[in-house]
Image (tube, rainbow, N blue to C red; front, side, top):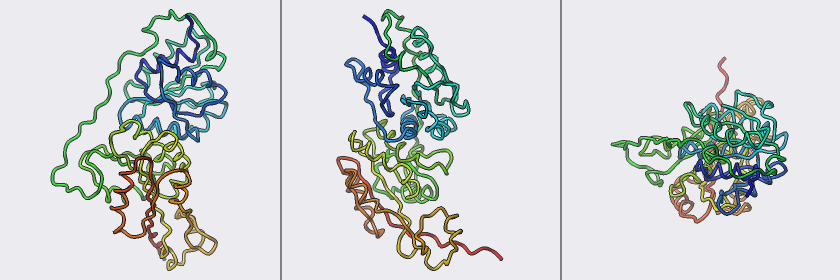
Length: 363
């Protein structure tokens, strides 16, 4: 009996309790993806739309449960297109292993904890063990393992020592959860719900709207200006904690960065609730008389006449296959969220909010 390089990787991931692999299949990963779906391995492959979303998804997964995922990035632009996502995971100490067919030396060490290029199949088991040991050691973080597609397809004798196919068992980080006494629940979320927060002013708004009883239930990128993180990270969090409610609270500008990943929720039946703050209500900036340059500095989207612009997010979500609602009055929000949370699949609530008037410059 012989094993291909792809099968060796798949068996090592299984032995290290990796439950999901995310990425974009294609040239350079076909042998690995095929091995993942082989009986005896059976690791689900989460097919994302953009490469950096796979990293954000694995990032959110690790933050939610403390276990790593694997990410497959192929081609010469696979890892470069995900550098920003890798930098976020590295900064926030999220462990994940990136498997690619690119040369590791093309990647900046500032976004990876370690990077290894495998030259022969005989080196692969030990390289896998080293990768798992490194990413889960003190100050965890992402690591990269590069193996050419020809090696992924090549086969070798299966009598490799089993110990070399896996890292030493690593303890799963456990968060100590203490009840916050004297704090009344003011939201429709369950006590152990996970709230994944997008970038910018959405964070304080969502924290105020949805206080939680337990610390560590608000997940957000360490850099509050990181756009496009929340949507795929929320998908990862739901994969990690399928029995818990997961709500992704995100602003419209942030949501536009990664809303295409709603398709992942539909394809894999992942019931995340997306709460999109659409800051383009009718009485927004009309009275502010802001100059065009000031409008752009505010990070908002506007029409040529200065009126706020935003797509119909609820309509877009329905076209993706989600249940979706638009909320235009505060009195409608709780009832609509209950519908979304009780939905059998992914859902979206678009909440119309007004913009704060721009302050006139001090003279």
